[in-house]
Length: 237
Image (cartoon, rainbow, N blue to C red; front, top):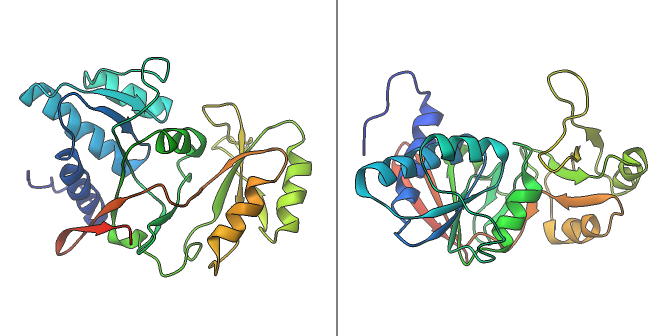
């Protein structure tokens, strides 16, 4: 593995190590789901190098406009669901990972709807992360993002409050509502450490006005977790 440049933080060095390991899982002929976020960006860069240096022949389905731009800049061919409704392998990051069932919280990068569509269409999903994302209970570190339709979002927020989500509308740098690639808003719900994420996911699935939520349960089959001791693979139990 290429040694990390000095300007990368320790966490970024770990992220890159996990991403480099995951990039080696990709084989020629694959349709690859390309995740969004800082760790996924390291993955896309690693795949770009393999395309250039090894003549790796893949097509990617990106989960965000940001990832799409990065992939294009690295000459990774992109495709759409119109061409491929099934994805061989998706590699994406996560905001929290619960070992064992490999339950995830995703969406703090703002791409959760597209990320979940891609994950659901994948034969295999591998998560790449550094060890700081491992938790004993989901919700210990971060809120659960919920992507909502802008129309009537205040009513949707009220429904989320009834679920004890302590909802907060996500704002962009301009202090206006953050808008996803799909044209939606995100309401972050601070449920805290969850005893039963499946129960909360079930309730979120039935909130009118909510398009999708950031609880990714039963999507990831394995994870590559990087830390001071190198990259450790985790399998779903």
